[in-house]
Image (tube, rainbow, N blue to C red; front, side, top):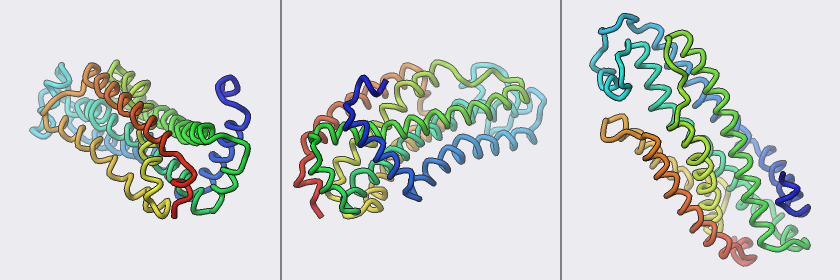
Length: 268
């Protein structure tokens, strides 16, 4: 599919960037450990805790009682713990992954290229700035989508086991569909374009990564507010958020592409 969308020179830049990103130890650890920890280890840990909770209906502690109304049906403490992981904590963990991977890979691709003094060589190649920009954004977004797919598989595996053990419905619903196919890709693109904008002001890729850490806070606060009972992130609200993030992406892509100049790229 990429052969029909991208030029050979753009595909070459994508392959080069993916190779460089993957062979950067910190990025490789982020791509491997973030999905493993957030979508495999932590969900499995919570399900292990659920195994030791009372299995009888009606014996729900005050800490989990607020989930009964959100779940919409009578559940045991074990089942409510599964619901907590599947519909409240899981989406937050899942959404962090494309954001973390996109920002760290973009920091390596844009700022790291300048650190390694290879940006000058790339700018001298017979490739337009627009093609370089599109290829680099595509490489970072592609890596984020791969990490998202792996995370979804790992989380689905854990939740499938939980559904069998605790006799609960499989977690994937309309809210998750919006999250996976609309919101997560939009968030990944937001992370990449945000890093392009701050790359000119960052002296090192590490500094750029530290700055990008602030992007995770809105995601955490959004789901913490949901846990407090302030609102419920249903499919309609998630779709609205996806549209807003998509609109922000369009604006950021336009600004970032215009600011993608040799002077700014080579600024030290």
